[in-house]
Amino acid sequence: MDLLQTIRQRRSARSFLNKSVDRSTLENIMADAANAPSAINMQPWEVHVVSSEETTRLSRKLLKRFKEHQITCGPGATQKIPDKFIERARRAAEGMTPLIEEMGTDFKTFVNTGSLKFYGAPAVLFVFIDDSFPPQRLTDIGSFLGYLVLSATGHGLATCPIGLVTSYEDEIKDALNVPETKTLVISVAIGYPEDEAPINRFRSERASSEEFVRWIGF
Image 1 (cartoon, helix red, strand yellow):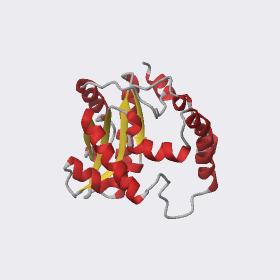
Image 2 (cartoon, helix red, strand yellow):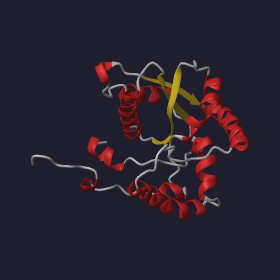
Image 3 (cartoon, one colour):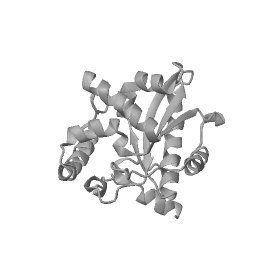
């Protein structure tokens, strides 16, 4: 697939087929993602790949904790978010809601429990960074994530970055035997999309460049 076509066609999937992804394909995607730029080439990303029954086992553990603590999806902001960003999220939720209802559930339940079930994906990638790095190096993780989801698309797979799992970092570290000196940044569900699932018809809006670009000296 052409690179620009891949960039323009990539979408998050929130329902996956019960079909495993072979390790060699995931290794190729990791190798592609490793080409992402990073400050002085430190490449601070560390990835734990979980698949098959281990994915199901971890999901059960997270759902149990969710029932106990009811930590839900949200922006995690410590200050008021400007209205234009909130409006984008609101429109996305409004677009997804009727599709989710077609699947026999409600928005809140689908997003919260779905996130912790990794939307049925056969594999999940947990991306960590060492605590020694300053917050600025999260930009490197963002670059890595961008390369990763594009490579997955090029390999005929779908992805869905999931942030809610960071609220259950302790449980994930314990399950995966990850040292305390690592911070979980994000997880990525990966697999073959279930094209017939109503939710996978959803296409989020994208702001035009006029909304976020200032041109100086042109």
